[in-house]
Image 1: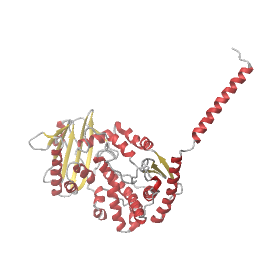
Image 2: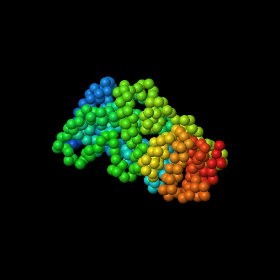
Image 3: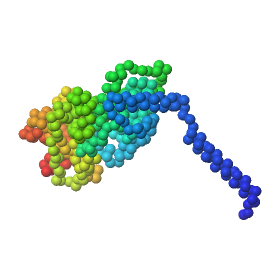
Image 4: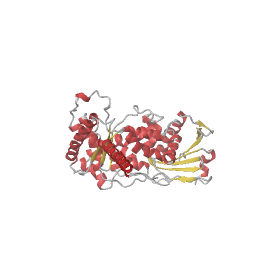
Length: 425
């Protein structure tokens, strides 16, 4: 079919107009100005960000990189970027960890670890990635100048901090984070102490869009879907880390804190964080090796740190404190001197092996009794006359503790015979 030149020109003209409209529309959408509220928010956030950099450099006597940038994220953007990234590991890693937590009664059967992570991320006030700082729009209140600048000083500390070596296990990673987050939290408190007059713009005080939340602390009561033990494990670097860094500061000011980064003398266990005297004396964990099953076709499942993991004193404390009093949990966990945790699977079945080393026979005895007291408070039912085998939710659990040794062996599996200590070497 032939088309006249005049028709061709008209078609080309219409197509050209369509292309122009598309381009103009795209430019309009890209260049569309922010709402006045968001524009004011960004201006205020950038203003206090610039002052926070000056304050940080003066307090720490260091020079920050010149290319640090501040961005504003919504809760949903934070969850999409960091929460969902973690939850995407749920096919394996998160499911394994959730199974471990439930086996040790740190989580209820109906609770979800991946859901807890997403809700935890949505509670953040700010986060640092490299030289980029992100503040969360719904949680960060830039007109509360003192707390907002303290938040940014917290994050600027992360920009400044030197990288630590890769942790060998969960406990070491928690200790590293305690130094990192404790340092940043102490810096924020240090700033607030030096500037103890709160500056608020009264016209924004009653704006419910911006809840006044400290950057480095968050309450699980606001986020009811987050298990209490998950909250306690995640708050450890901020609360106990800050106390640890405060002790370092009292023993040599910022030079003593800085030495943890520059001379590779970072704390290696949560015990050193909880008991700084053990850090100063160089007390480290004992090498501990979990026994190997000799029966069953078990496949070893590596943790993110290798074939075995170490959970440490604070993890044990949180596990016990979920059921026992704070004093009982502290006393029963404080004698920790090392542990080795190994996880196996066989089709739909699993087996966890946890060998814990204690500083003395008394420490071992105290933990063994506390652990049994905890089990008696759970839904687990005793299965034998020796009172060392429990069953609940399709899982069998045994506790073996020879009164002549300083070790405790905890086994848990969906198969009853798999938790018999005679089948291990």
